[in-house]
Length: 119
Image 1 (cartoon, one colour):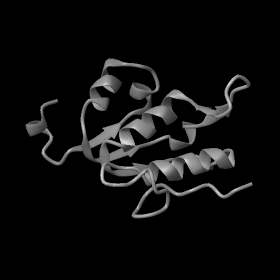
Image 2 (image 1 turned 180 degrees about the vertical axis):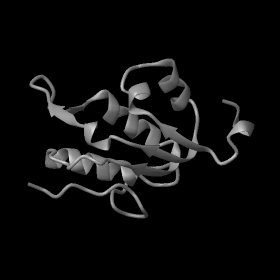
Image 3 (image 1 turned 60 degrees about the vertical axis):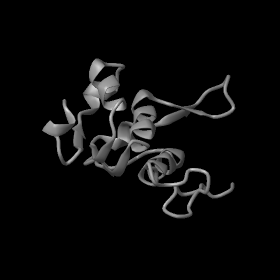
């Protein structure tokens, strides 16, 4: 899609196109957007990896983190009652706080991503 054919720079993205490493996903990752609307946000999750010290994001969550860096605004949608791990909820909140003009170095400040409370 040429930039002139999408003057508002809005993308509505199907999770089916981005859950796997498709050509559409690669194309989206090469662009920047004014707004990205992502449905099925409850499917974005991480899991503990016995070999890793940190949680590992699934394909959808890793896409959301990357595309959020390329969008001025992100809208996450889900019609499913959320029965997710609290860590997954923090990941979704972090996505909402990301963007090209936000500092990821100072969490919670100047519109940056929220910080997780200490355990």
